[in-house]
Length: 422
Image 1 (cartoon, rainbow, N blue to C red):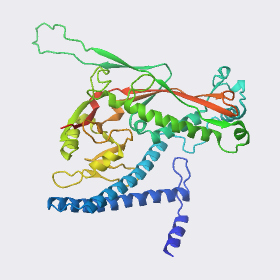
Image 2 (image 1 turned 120 degrees about the vertical axis):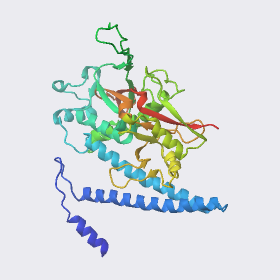
Image 3 (image 1 turned 90 degrees about the horizontal axis):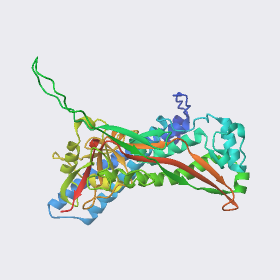
Image 4 (image 1 turned 90 degrees about the vertical axis):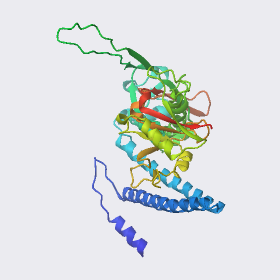
């Protein structure tokens, strides 16, 4: 009876349209599901704190219990799953607000129809030649291109926190002021000798090419009633997100972005930026991260960069840091308290970055800083599709490319936590 009453109440809810988007019962159900997940997360964290405190008390008494430790670890893993679900909803909401496709109508229906015909039969209308038809290529419709970018924002954490710059040339150069201006105090009639002039350095961000090559049989294309653009976008998103996720963290800069981890002191790109490398903060604890080292990491970042600062780490590291407490016994990690908000560490939001290293001796499992100022992603305008029905008959291959580059644009706004070896 109670469940029936809840369903009836939900069915009666009418949500006003916002920003031109009509929200129905499905959207309301989704919002309630997110709210329920957040409530479960906070309940699980409350249980975790109680059980973890009991585990610590037992250890202090010399009564270490393996079953109690296992119980704490299981709750910790459950918290990680719940927080991941909340984070996924948060990223999805953010990408929609940033202008992702998300159900918006296609802006160029005529060209989109021509693109679909090209996918099925290879037909190209000269009047709609917005691609390079003479070369066998065809540019995807703007909506399809936006859909891919929208999905990449959802699955590529670096895209959601870094600056993304669209370019229309082969590269993008930035000029850096290395300062160096000097001044001096003088009397009313004293000479004014020439002072030092600031020096400038340039840094070029050159995009590499990322590709995907999904295929379908000609019969599937002929008979398909599905949205071919959505299908191809999904295939491309899977490949692009995997490749980008690796490159934005560890890429060597050769035909791909330079990964942010390579700019850390001692890394392969430590000398690339004219301002130097990303500074490290040692944990001073053998193969472990302590509460003090997290506080030191936050303190190492100048206060003018902390307003939009975030932590990045993988889920394994989060599980480790979830057990840390400050001097008053308060846990440094706190769960999301409502939909749209990430978990926090020392009051700063956490971004789940799957490719980050685990906590281990000599590793750098945590980055902290303003990534919007710190890391730049450059997208060469447009996605290109080459329809190839000949190479692998009876399959039609859709060779899809996009040129993407990236690198650190300001190493001063990011700090890295390095786990000590001894």
